[in-house]
Length: 362
Ligand code: NAD
Ligand code: ZN
Ligand code: ZN
Image 1: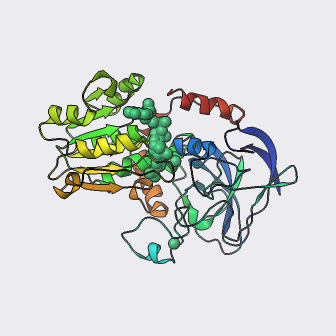
Image 2: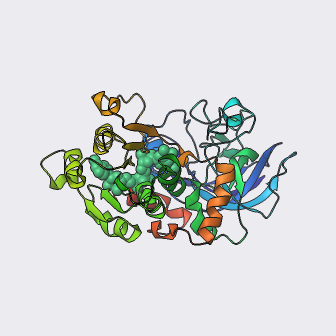
Image 3: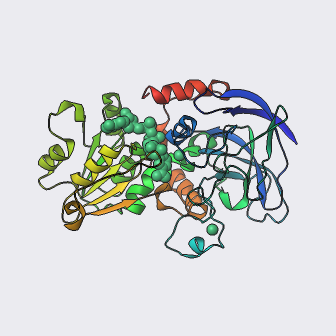
């Protein structure tokens, strides 16, 4: 058993508290990882607010991290102690009907089908003050050591800087993959990206790498515009600067709507606006933001009947066990610069400050 520090969420809506926790050794098929760095994704915030289904408190949040394998359980063959790894929240068991379908990117063991609050054998490896603490999405990167199933961790290039590539564990891969993998943005196309947070800015990077000639960033926080332009946005607009709905503004700006639109916020109204912003005939709209459970979107069916395609994506549609190592290689080859997404670097003891910065749009 390892004793180390972790940020524990004892209850919904409460700040995290830094605790000493015990992390039990990995059981068969599991891997214990020393987490070196982690990002904060808005999904962690949704979880703390209680709008993510299937989460049990107390819990150790975090799902966008990178680390080094400390020890392995019986039967583990794909990683060994000392390997650099990225754990991921969409497992790939390789055995279920979803995993066996080459077109699907997530497993029947993912949180969409069943809770990942406990490891697959329905027990936890974390305890604190004599209490069992739950896992989050089988990842829990806000701990100095965590235990994950072997099929939810990918070995990456030993040269990768963990404090940078941790973002590939969620936000970057989600946005970049939404553009290059889910939408398959074509060279010369026009794109609109709603929401310029970590995920939306990664969509911008993906559109740019895919060769889009016009990338329009949309956010109510204008402080995001400079960074979006640095990453490839050709223009940025705030819906608050217009009297008419943003979909009408975008349609006028582009003639008949954009070729690809992306919603990386998680609101019903911006989801509908993104759909209506793309070309009625051939436009593709990708839903990336997460809506609270039981949300309902009502749309004019003509929006889809005329030919638009409306898609969603989890983690950029990637089969992460194979895609994460490939993305890390692309990072090392400088195919994209995800380092631009890093705004602040804080020690684990300041994790609540990190959430304050996220809430303040910084
Ligand atoms: P973030 O908080 O960093 O960014 C959200 C951005 O949206 C902010 O810049 C904010 O100013 C902007 N915004 C808010 N309301 C707006 C509005 N009405 N109009 C325009 N802009 C608005 O969040 P993030 O980490 O980038 O995550 C974005 C969303 O993606 C979240 O809902 C998150 O849960 C979701 N997400 C989904 C996946 C997936 O696999 N589909 C993965 C990761 C995150
Ligand atoms: Zn599976
Ligand atoms: Zn995330």
